[in-house]
Image 1 (cartoon, rainbow, N blue to C red):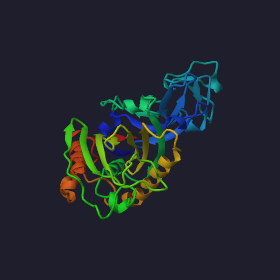
Image 2 (image 1 turned 60 degrees about the horizontal axis):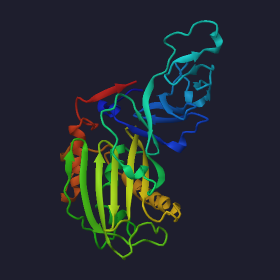
Image 3 (image 1 turned 180 degrees about the horizontal axis):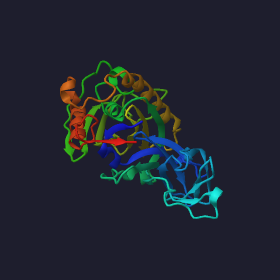
Image 4 (image 1 turned 60 degrees about the vertical axis):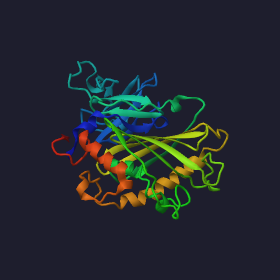
Length: 339
């Protein structure tokens, strides 16, 4: 079945797996922008991405295995190398292999502990996050979080400040302090920059993860929202201790996404990582039921379709930028039909 998608989304890097999910011993199946793809590693450890479809009879290559630096189709044993070229047809081993015997490949690279794929030549670069490559910062993977929702819904929810007291009381906000601090959004190309200073909720006994010594210190949060679906959040409490959140949503389909949330901290390296992982699991589970209830399921990028107030500045600028960059689903004239 064909679908229409904003063409420019195919020219973006998207995460498709945590690095540890792609085993060197076998292929990994996933979906990106309605395209079934298979990820596998050659013996040098490099990841590769290709359409999860054998050219012969349309079998999923992800059901096969790896052999001699090739991926082997489980149906008839055809082998494909990293360039997608068929190197062996066992049934006709003594004749030449047709030039058509190849699989579509995609650009693929490993960065920040994740495997990334671009279905067409990428137009944007990766955000700069030196903390994730710094040994003085402990890097923790949480999730991933698969939701039956559009990726933009997951992104907007991550950076929505107004819901904290109501959806995450005692964890990210307090109902007796519902005000959203004033903040300004600066847009540079496809990236939104904004900062918020607000009172911190005290650490709970279940999740002692923040570096706050006072009961309610101020949390300083600096955001970069890289359209279409990436957020870098740096937060601190006025001292040297800090955290970095790297969140990015994989658009598996227009109504399905997979969120990856990497957390780094430069303190408490001796504390169990399960506290942070459990905290994020709780937060994302609280958010999930809310986001899945939203209608329409797709973010309405036309600003007249919903009511926006001052504290919605991030969402307003995100929607405007997505339209300006031709990344919005309902932006006319910027769609591509994929088979």
